[in-house]
Structures are given as structure tokens and as C-alpha cells.
Amino acid sequence: MVRVGIIGGSGIYRLLESPERRVLSTPFGDATVFLGEFGGEEIAFIPRHGEKHEIPPFKVNYRANLYALNLLGVERVMATNAVGAIDPELAPGTFVIPDDFIDLTKCREGTFYDGKTILKVRGREVGGVIHVSMTPYTYCPEIRGALKEAARELGLEVVDKGVYVCAEGNRFETPAEIRAMRILGGDIVGMTGCPEAALARELAMCYASISVVTNYAAGVGGRAKLTHEEVLEMFSRRINDLSEILRRAVGNIPVERSCPCGEALDEFLSR
Image (cartoon, rainbow, N blue to C red; front, side, top):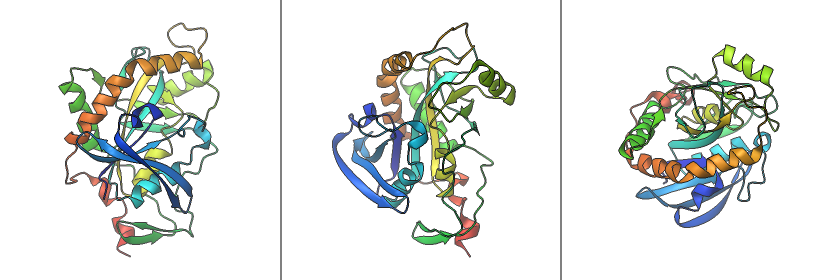
């Protein structure tokens, strides 16, 4: 039984001690998972974009990834994201632990519950048409607290709130789209946070993410052009700090869950 899962860039799984590569079959396709010691215990790590960073955001098999973690018994999931700043106060290099999201994706499979597929969650079968709630917390408060405490212990600053807007990609957003996202209440924009967070809730998993601001979004901060190389360069600068935050956070996450995330399916599991 593996307690904690991490979903993020391939640079992190290389930090696992003696990682074991496993390919798990799910009703939604295969998922590659690496098992290894990290933060003092065995964790499961999924390289979201593949081992060679070959999978674009809109083609990530989010359902297979989350269900594979469910098969391993994972209850707690931490994720990492590279994001652009909609809020001009969020300078490149800033760590943000979002507390809400807006999903503007268009072409992704956003739910496990298609009315016919039967899943197993915590040893119980569940299926049909199911509507989970993203309240009272969109992201798990216990994992968010563990991430914040880990950063504090390391002397690293984080922004402890923010609305993550998920765009479809692959292109970067237009200045008009960023203005619209800001009107909607968005603070940061990325391409990988959804439907990942909602799918975790559909499996009664705890889920929270930590984002690295790699750039100002289109039209923010007076920037005329954004390049992918710029995004990669800034993310690589913060990868060591990000990895250490995750490592410490693993040990900070309470063993027993007292958040409401695990209750997301209770009314359906009791049928």
C-alpha cells in the first residue's frame, strides 16, 4: 500500500531512491508509475508528460494516471505545475499553492463516471452518474498545509492562495484571453491542472498542487513575446527548491485523514 502519490515533471522522479518502473493497466488505458523512496517513505510518482516529456497537455491520460494511483491505494496526491502569472504581482520564480480553479479546457475527458463504467474505490464498487462536490475545499486543506509548512521549514516563500485557470493549449493564451481570465478571478494560468484535481476528488483522494510561476502571461508585465524556452529555463531554476518542498511535505502530511476529501463518495458507496 502506497500512501502518497506525486504527479509532475520528469525531473522529480529522478530524485527517487532506486525507483521501480511499473506499467499499470486501467479501464482508461495504461499508466507508467515509478515507485521509490522519497521524503522518508515509499511514494508513487507519475511523470505527467511521459518519461521523455513527449505527451502534450491536452493528450495526457489524466484518468489513467489517477486511477493507477487509486489501484496502488494512494490517498494523498501532490502535483506540480508550471504557470504564467495573470496577476502582475506574481513575479517569475514565485511558488503558488492555489486554493481554487477555473477549468476552461474543451477537449478532455473530465469524469470517470460515464454512466456505465464500474470502478473500485477503497475496495468498494461505484459507478453510474455521480456528481461530486468541490466544496468546502477545492484542494485538500491538509496537503496545502503540508506544502506551506515544508516551504516555511526550508525558508522559502510561497503564496498561500490563488485561482488556477486551466487552458487547453498547446498554444499560449492571447492577451484578450488573459484579460478575460483576470476578470473571471484568475491569478495564474496553466495547461495541466484540470481535470486532474476533479478526477482525484471523484476517487475520494486528497489532492493539492504547488505551481511555479515561470513567466508573465500574455499582455502582463509589458512582455511582448513568450517562448517555451523561457518557461523551461525558469522551471529548471526552481526544480531543486520545488523538489525539497515536496520531500518535506511528504512527512508533513498527517497519516490519518481528517479532511472531507475522503468522504466525497460516501453517499454513493453506501448504496
